[in-house]
Length: 174
Image 1 (cartoon, rainbow, N blue to C red):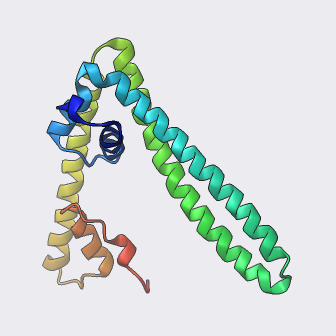
Image 2 (cartoon, one colour):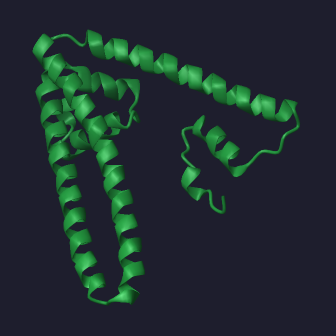
Image 3 (tube, rainbow, N blue to C red):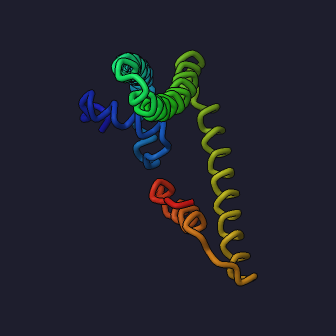
């Protein structure tokens, strides 16, 4: 099946893998030994792409800073708002790049050792940790109802995470 994936589809699979959003069957595709070098190459290209995005953000931020500074006092607030927006975007990309680099390390070790034992062990550990957090969130929900406490938007967003829905961004007015 992996040979049926064109480069774009394979790159998307690799990106989704870094986000831990692929099925067990898709994971098997990546773990096929014939795909290891392709997986590594896709991760390296993803890192290059992310670095380009960071470089573009830095360039845009500098251009906006100069443009807003030219406006005098009126531009100060605009410059601060722009810098905050750029900073948030940069942080999000850097956080993702950290996880891409971590996966690259895993794949490089996979290639160097010829064994996926360490990846399988990490997957088992990740599954155990996910189950621990699932139980903790469920206990939180049970205790909230047991003690007749009022649920908040944050509580509901946390519970949504159990259904693989990320709704924290929709919370406002906190």
